Image (cartoon, rainbow, N blue to C red; front, side):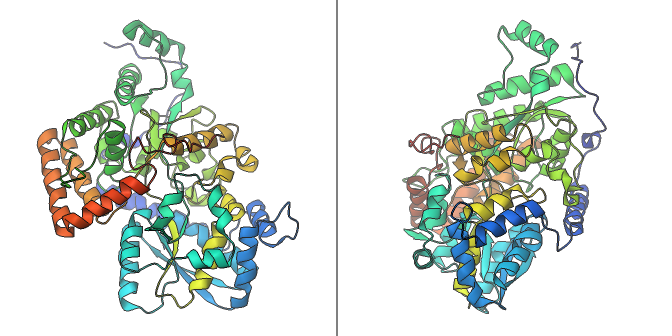
Length: 532
């Protein structure tokens, strides 16, 4: 029998005490949306609001942000107008409803109307408006992976002429290099990047510093226990912690249920870290079922084995709950994990759907094993081509993503927007939010230096959905090789349906023009790493 390690704080009840099914997930999602609505339409963080106002209006060069100020000054001519934009439902929408929208109206006299849609429905809503051409949508919060589709179909308007007119070129230099290419397609810019969704590793310092655990690890493996630096080491360390400390603490535990967050993210980052390529660039035949793909899936299965029972049925919110309750020792996830771990997000009632953190002050940050963390999701603010208020939509987007205003937005405790500008990572204001916030920001920047992107080409969501479903079948006991073969065949069918030549061109564009398309094409590998 394995001797269990003591010496850590007592933990509460776990959501892993029962299996979470689809009904439970829908109920949790409903609670999340209700909590978001409870924050109220007029709440603004006073400190952050005042900072944004000063930057947008001051004539003092030491305070003013010229990118924000020019947008506000130009937008005043449209006072009395109403601007309509899309938002993902729930917490993402609170930014515009409770902070950015009221501030914009106060500064310019322009009202902001928010259309809330679940993420998957934003795309179809925007396409429907593109077909109807009613002018019902002005500004779009959309995924970077949609930009090629939206540009080819002329759904979004290029904004280069507006950037020149309002002298916003300098704002691009403040973006982390990883994010700059995602705003462009075929030499034109289609929006402002607005959410740095880089995954890094969060780990329990108290677990890794536990003397009994360290001694047991050295006795078993003849070397010191450390934060894992590779994927095989991650599985080994996670399983060791589970063997020694479960059921009080498990080595890891990630949201593996189909569609939330989507298992493709896990595969994409590890597959490329292991040296994988998605397609043969000449024939466009899928390569995810090769030896690297099989190795990647077996590593992921080993992570599941080191997790609490039922992990394959848990959504990302439940994984966060486990982490905050101290039930897991390591988790790689989106940047809100850092804010929630220190109870920064929980200051606001919109985050009532998650518990108070029991691990505040005990969390360390690192790049993910293998270095190449996924940049999973994110948003770009674009201008709808059918809008009758294109310049006004552009001005709002320029203002909201300006260095000073965006800095306040990524610090809001009740939203899910995350740092993406160099000035965000270097912000002294943000670094004071909790004792280790400066370390958190530095690791987010380092993570972006080595990050790999979600694929950006036509049909990317179709490929992702097929892989997500296939991985769920493997979790349920399906043969790894056979299931990956089936997914590869489905990928080939998607490619043939969309057109092999078209997909080849899109894939080459992704490989050649986007930092983070492969592990050998990251900002760090190209000499563009940001040092904090």
